[in-house]
Image 1 (spheres, rainbow, N blue to C red):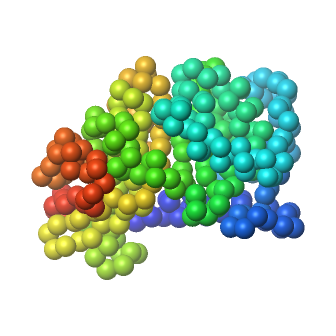
Image 2 (cartoon, rainbow, N blue to C red):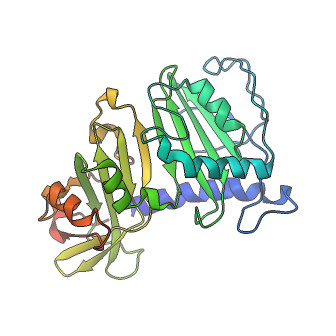
Length: 303
């Protein structure tokens, strides 16, 4: 239940912020949320609350040196820019995202570019860490909730980590990821043998593809597991959420996996099932077979 509560809380915060600006736009394109004026806030970290403030950056925020903002694109041009970047990212292979390369792209330059076509931005700094979260309104065919979320994290002058969420694209579905980036370094699972707030015999089921030498973590979190007696079966659907970093950092799975400080740990595919990473890769890379994983229920805790 901790996982469900956390995810519901996070989604509620995002949706409340999106909805608070809904009345500011008299018209909107079909299947789009109303376009919001870019909002930039500086808040100390860590924080779970987003407080919209005026768009100027306080001069006292030493982690945000003054820079000349790029011109803000119109609503239509912002959408066109977002769609162009989504379509063209194949020429900027992960962990590059929208021409931002972890470990190379200057954080100020990246934020300035993203702000030029953003719908809403929230920033925070503290303890030597700068985090910027950028929301982009898109058609519901690209995101079921009407926007995608791009978050940059920096502990130096450069972007150190990029997180992408709420995106629906075949490029980041399981077969495409396996075909494009090859066999993962490891595959990780997390589930529970019971969850009283979900339908009967249904439990959360998360699958993570970890590419250590490429700087990619692809997290499939929309999968529901089925409790089939002594077995839990999870079939991977939808698009992965992405965490991206520079391979030069040589991070392990625990360094980059999300929610690791809040919830029960993941298990490797080999420890949690009867197949290994190579079998998983060969079996599901073509996309001809529904990717399902069986794991013994006794391995997992109650939620």
